[in-house]
Image (spheres, rainbow, N blue to C red):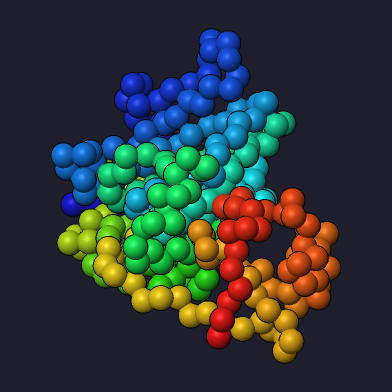
Length: 312
């Protein structure tokens, strides 16, 4: 049977607050699930970390497992990507990302989701060489802002096509009218599924769970029945992919003849000379050698020396 917890009915020892803490850089966190460990490595983990003013920074790093991150409040940057509610960041195992910077005025609330145990982040630059030596990596990540469908008289699913693969990865946005019911997609093709209610409430086991509420469904369990409360709900359904060898990512040439792509060997981000990066002040058509030496990877902060030309 699926497990469901809500922030308003967690035990006090699961919630750490800033009240009375003199150091504003401390990061209180709320633990929804922590059912995996070194001895029992398979099980859900969900923790909401709050970076309050004046902000906080976590160095670029990677983990040995796949992860989801969801920004549920405030704003900040993941790498150089602006994030705010409800941005979803998915990152594969052994793919570096960051640095993570919460906004200095409003901070952020960032929810981390896992289905397996990990020893913690392997931070740069200390673990960069170890990452280079890791065989058969298939690095990939994506950051996507999710817009929920407008509330109508029934139930509306919106699939997020950018976050999907052949091993069961997917994300759906869901909006439900009050007291409606639906069934989440089948979790059996993946490695575990989270249903994150960010607005409204969820009725489960004859109890109403106000947002933020979180359900975890194992791959061997039946699809989760979602019952909206009196205000309806908005939710994200986040399905982890199966843990299995992956095919190499397809490497495509530049969008324009005569231009090249340069790829970060650490996280797989690609710079296309034809497109440039106008947001970084690098105009379309800027050759790699003309990109400033101070420029770094938008996804993992690697420098230019960590990029290689893509041979097609």
